[in-house]
Length: 174
Image 1: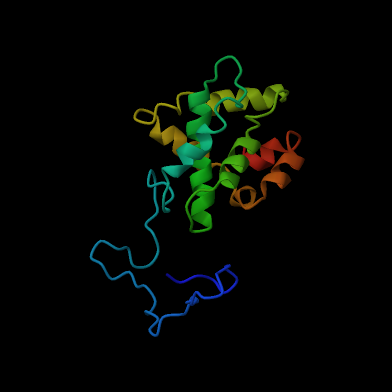
Image 2 (image 1 turned 90 degrees about the vertical axis):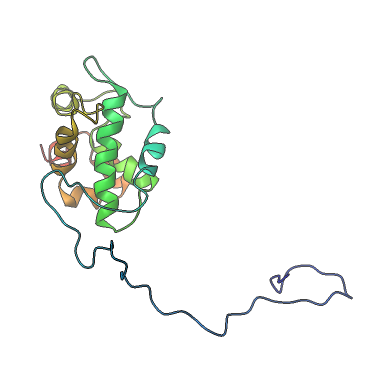
């Protein structure tokens, strides 16, 4: 079995180091029948395409116990709306969701903050109401994701945290 050159071996043991293969395959091409060749389709209710999107739910659920809800809000609504925003952010970069997508989505709506302005709480309550029920409120979850400006989605989580809560209207597109 090959081993890196720095791996310890006994003096009598022969060492096979890693080597590159003789042939390097060509670039991958979208040539299967079901592949979308070119731009992804866009339109109402199509969402934002990207790989491994289900992983966003796993990441968002890590914050379940830290999400601060007020009267009229549910943690499930917060998570589903957050996931919709995070998936849009991930698709901008052409990758699957990562923890920073979730942090930005939670941050712009102050789901992890104890004290938030009443106008933010009111807007959040109205926008996220029922989003947790994906079957009946898919259009509403799309609205949550679509309203956030792309410039906000391109921010780092620390930049979002610095601008909250004072700049919440610009960050959320409200």
